[in-house]
Image (cartoon, rainbow, N blue to C red; front, side, top):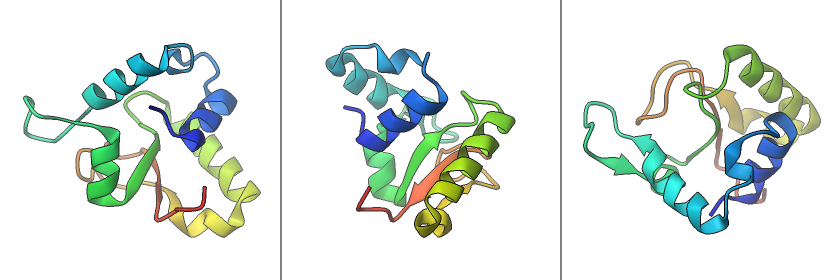
Length: 111
C-alpha cells in the first residue's frame, strides 16, 4: 500500500504515474518487486523494508524521474516545509540500493 506522502507527491508532481490508477492490492505487489539490492540481482526488497533498514523514504527515484524534475520537486517541498528541510535531500551517491540523485526523506514520523 502506498503511504500518504508518496501519493500526495505523485499527484502533485507526476499525476500520470500509473501507480495512482492501480488498485491498492496491485500497488502492494508492485512496491515489493521494484527495489533491488546492488550486486544481488536475484534479491528484491520492498520499499517498506528499505525504509526500515535505512531510515529513508524514497520519494522520487532517479531511475524513473529526470534530474530537473527531482530538483524542482525537492526545492518546492523544502520551501513549503522548511521544518523538514534537514531531512529532505537528494542522495549524492547510491546508498543501500537507492540510486544516486534520488530524493529521500529521513526520520520524519509526523508526515
